[in-house]
Image (cartoon, rainbow, N blue to C red; front, side, top):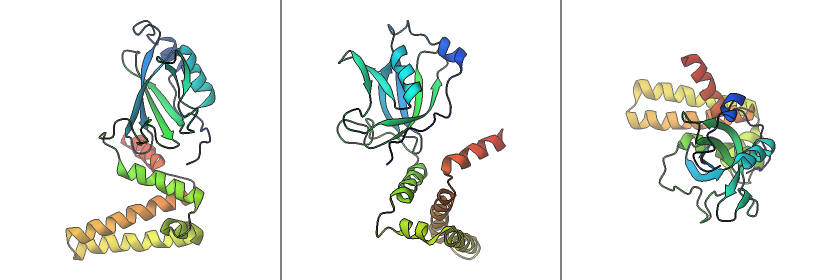
Length: 211
């Protein structure tokens, strides 16, 4: 996965940042980090005003390490950084929710999360895998063969899967419909990625329409 720093999409406004309650935790705020794609909770860390500012400037999640008594950028040694996508402030202004894309395992044990039992959105995780396949193009991968075939080939495949899903709904059982629906969703994710888009873009549009 690329460790390139992304532009942070959503940040607390100036009023929210100015109103953070640093005093409640003696200058530290807990920061819950969640995977921006799978929505799985990855870890909990603490930030002070300086580490938050470094995070905002450079885009890699930086904490204040209580054990080391210094600023600590996640992945500074392992390379498994957390590329921040957004930061939100809770209703009491004393906790941060950070949405990030991890460049490797988050937990020091090598697990993808410090909360291995935390629920996650598998379709979001699949979308991230498709993103990785598009960038790396590993040999022998079916997804790679789709990208190599070009957008017309992928679009044709989406059309075929859509028709098969519709026919299954009319003439076949639930198991067949679910199978065709899964094929359709996967190929649609590939088509979106071929156009530089992803599942989050669909989520955002649906949210706007819902409002």
